[in-house]
Image (spheres, rainbow, N blue to C red):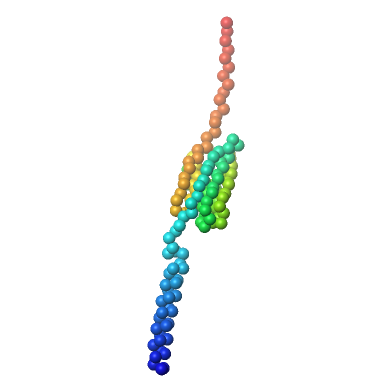
Length: 133
């Protein structure tokens, strides 16, 4: 009986070690494929010089909103949490200098980019008409 218990104990230890190693591989989030949440966004400007962003998304993943200038410097960033389903953002761009900007919305896999151009209208001079008869 003693000769039978030792090999069974060794076999059980090997099975337990292999089971734990297999379980650790499946629990590792780095091995899991990245799934992206679906989102819909709409962007429009207001008369006051603001950009409004409406974002609706599924729960379970994060979405990031980022505004960058032409040099690639990030001017604004906001992450919409995985538990949120909607976000409404109002960006005040009236203080930014004229130039080209890019608004990017990403879920980690897919990225939607929108170009934003700021230009100040130059005041037109009033020309005066003088007529003689």
